[in-house]
Amino acid sequence: MRFILSILIITMCYSCCEEQKEAQKVVSDLPSEFVGTWQLISSDYHSKDTVTSSMKEGQQMMKIITPTHFAFFLNDLKQGKDSSNVAFSAGGGTVEFKDGQYIENLQYFSAREWEGHQFSFKLELNGDTLTQQGVEELADLGLGEENLLLIEKYIKVKN
Image (cartoon, rainbow, N blue to C red; front, top):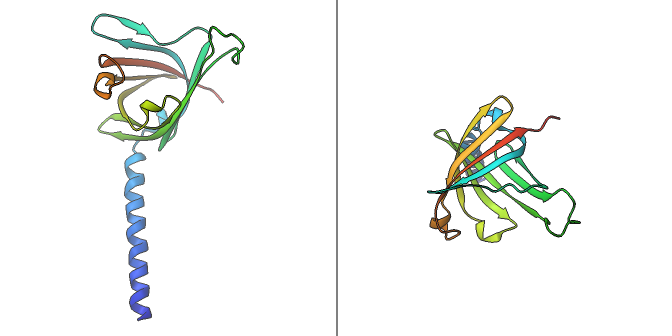
C-alpha cells in the first residue's frame, strides 16, 4: 500500500513539474533585449482622422518588463503640488510572447475598468529605443468610441 501511495505522489509531483515547465516555456520566449526598465518618450493614438499624443508636459511614465510580467507607473513631476497637472496611475500583469506578438494581460490598474483585458503589440528595438505598436480595441471593450492604433516609444533606462 505504501509503495502504491509513494508512486502516486511521485507521479503527481512529476505531472505538476511538467505543467510548470510548459507554462514557463511559453513566457520565457520573450527575447531578452525587451527585458528591462523603459521610460516613455512618445505615445500617439492614431484614429481614422487624427493623431493625438497622450503625453502631457510635466508627467513621466516608466515601464518595467520581465520575462513573465510587466508594470507601468505614470506620475506628475511636481509630486502633486501643481493642481493643474496632478497625475498618478499604475498597472501591471503577466506577459506572453507568441508568434512575434507581445501580449500584456492587464491584471491590476488604477483605472479598474481596464483590468482583465489583454493587449497585443508588435515590439521593435532600434538601439536603446523600444517601439510598441498595436491596436487598442477600446470600442470592443466598451472603453471608447473607436479602436485606436497606439504607437509608443520608450528609451531604455541605464543603470
